[in-house]
Length: 553
Ligand SMILES: Cc1cc2nc3c(=O)[nH]c(=O)nc-3n(C[C@H](O)[C@H](O)[C@H](O)COP(=O)(O)OP(=O)(O)OC[C@H]3O[C@@H](n4cnc5c(N)ncnc54)[C@H](O)[C@@H]3O)c2cc1C
Image 1 (cartoon, rainbow, N blue to C red):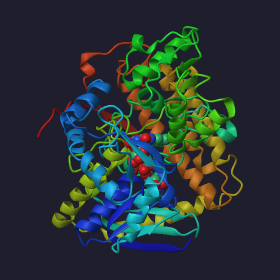
Image 2: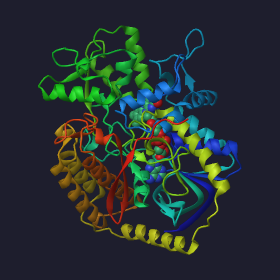
Image 3: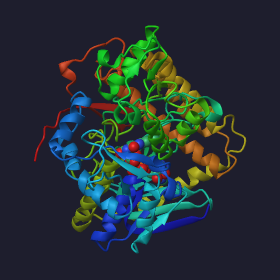
Image 4: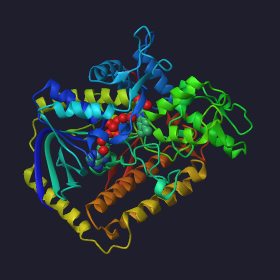
């Protein structure tokens, strides 16, 4: 592999929502040189690839940021960082107005006021939100974008100084050197067996290409993680895995069982409760379950068709094929569990400036923990907060890197890629290893197969199997650099799975029905009114219990 070295003041790993916005803010506020490295083309990468039809975090008139903190904290049964939430809630409106100036269409009523859906959500025409962000980034003279580069590891001595990766189009080894690094690679999908089989396996809720790379890099470098056990499981339209919020909140469609009984009131309306209600109805023999859309008028139907074209076109196609939501209720199901810090509180343990426990490393967006319900505008806000943190950090940074150590680490990493690439006759394909991992997690660590419920003995088995599968990585057959990408994606998921299992085991209660359902410990316990954090040390996940952080101004 050719060894390519790239130097900058700031390296941003992941040119998604948070990464692009951080780059824009640093470029507009400073003369620092910024590099974005992304595994894909940033015009259509990550969660925003297909577009979104709403900004889920916005403070409408008559409300204050503290209301948002209270809502997110209640939805997460108290396990949130109030301080982090407050910081981003105070900025979501500002970043919304900024995105509008940059070209995003936000729907307005006849009086020129934003059209909201509930008190914290704005309707947008967001199919092109990612191309808008990417174009803004590419206008900046001090930002260079390296696309189709898969980053696998951080470059660090005592502090983080860049990252290593490989080019998917030029088969080269990339060594990025930087004074500070922002990790913005999103959350982790594909750890559990998904709803749809084989060729349709990627028809999942979360971006299938966000594989937990940032978590993995941080975990392997010894960074502290938080609340992985608060998994996110989406309640989705069956088969298409399209969002249900537009039907439930947008149209007011109720959750009904096969007998037509409204069941949502029985279980509660928080995100996990809506899911758990559906699982429970199915378990009691009253499924399948639906969102009640039958009888909606033609205008609402047409609005729904358009709304779904903005974010999940498959659902509109399905409706056109089967007669539409006016004639049949929309069947719903839970997805497989994900680790996603933008919806729940899992991810890097960060300070208010979004610095992590590793010096020189910052985190923003779905990869950062503590602040659930952050969504698009929260990710933008965190990108901005991290940008400010990085600019301040670089002004004060003193320590220089240990060049000799870092050079030898780069040589080792390049040799690792080349060794894997030469393994043309390995016993397994990366896909086979991935399926085996998903089967283990599904069956033993609370996947769809067990209605998300797990036991201590199951977790113990899952932990053992994940270790065994990790040992098989050197036996994976690699034909080309695309297989190498898949191999590292499996590695990332295995590392996330290992930490997730340890967190599920450590929280000996059931805090969030459905999201975290420990069979032996069915209720909540006061002693777990705390964060479960972890650090990987000598190959073992060390659990740290931390006291809840109360709101500070
Ligand atoms: C299907 C779906 C619908 C949603 N709908 C809405 C909605 O309507 N409203 C709303 O407000 N929010 C919505 N959200 C949530 C919101 O989109 C996300 O929370 C937010 O975009 C996450 O931003 P991020 O920067 O953390 O991640 P992303 O925007 O996903 O960016 C991650 C980036 O990292 C890159 N990357 C990953 N791994 C690597 C690697 N190893 N090397 C280099 N690059 C890498 C990816 O290619 C990607 O560009 C939705 C999310 C999903 C998945």
